[in-house]
Image (cartoon, rainbow, N blue to C red; front, side, top):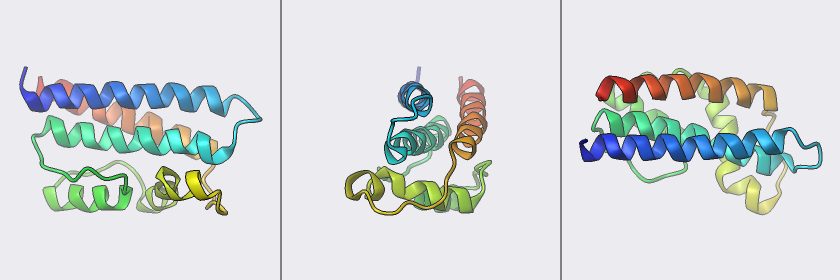
Length: 130
């Protein structure tokens, strides 16, 4: 296995752990939304990075979904997600989780749909790279 493929598979595994945390927290009405959506943001970020790794692309270690979007565009990778949704989900990585600031409107349903789409997309890229 190449180092890039190993990294891609590790990122997929890490993303799956965030998906499990997201699902558990999303089912609990007492869970703070910023913590639930933090795990959605983390899963999305790692799914994108898994595709980059599978393709052998160089990317920055960042939580910034918009920077990852820009990197994808520069590398000719089409992320199957709306820019607006990534922009609204991105701040959950740091700002909203630590500061408890007013959060943009990202619903659990939107996050679930995005996770499902990017999970499938990333898995197919990693399988192709094998």
